[in-house]
Length: 112
Ligand code: SF4
Ligand code: F3S
Image (cartoon, rainbow, N blue to C red; front, side, top):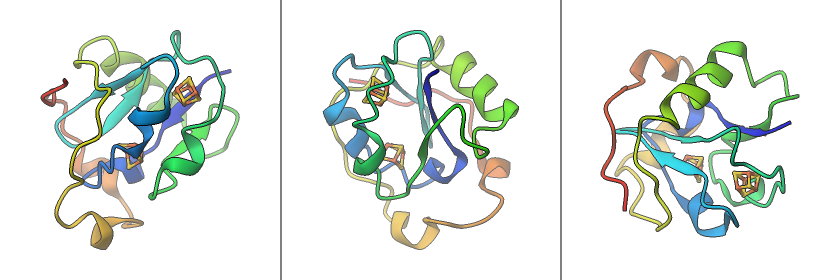
């Protein structure tokens, strides 16, 4: 089992999650973070920290095969992030918006 960042992170990127992860396994994309499935120790402490409820277990129906593949792929490419940053300016408005996967950006973020 691992934990997975879901599409509601896209264009919100609150980054509260990175501050609590004991193994620093979040990776930074242009408009979303992902979790490295082989580094995550399944502790679950990041789940309640996300204001967008965008972190779920891979056993959750929200963890679609596409999202599992996206987390696995981009956690190998994007830079590590361990420090919280400002969320996107309109994060609260976009929290819960449907169809966010269409806005996914494969470009890397700044990392730390
Ligand atoms: Fe990190 Fe634990 Fe969240 Fe996995 S479940 S990403 S180890 S805080
Ligand atoms: Fe994304 Fe939630 Fe972390 S919105 S950056 S998974 S706190």
